[in-house]
Length: 184
Image (cartoon, rainbow, N blue to C red; front, side, top):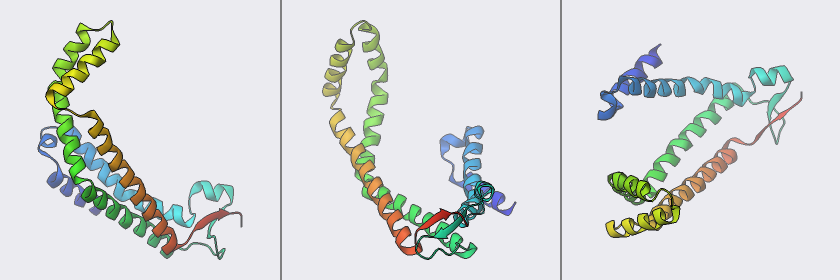
């Protein structure tokens, strides 16, 4: 109950102006935050092998090198480290891709402004897709919109996120060890 009250108060503070006018959207965001807080105990239980599926199958979670069972303290440490590394990774991705994100946001705004004109082009040339594509390219060039740079920016963001995600998982595995599921 305390966690729900804490996150509910945080949700009210953290919602954007658009969310303030849409209570259903705000409540959905709050529910997602509360669910994420409540998922931590489930993640710890999964790390130590205390899930219904593993129990039913008669399997046990152990360290790969030693074969000893993963305890509650170690499972909690593994989950805590994973969550901390996820936060660090997200912040690094945001910091490293700030320029690209700004470009992508500007590109998206320009496309939204062009949406009525693009719809009109599609309606005019509904029977000829090649003409629609050619007209859209001409309109993009006229307005200074570069789709190549957009995809490069998106690709660099994705690449950085993948590399940092891999490194954080590797770091977690190196610090806490590898676990495996075995039959006792």
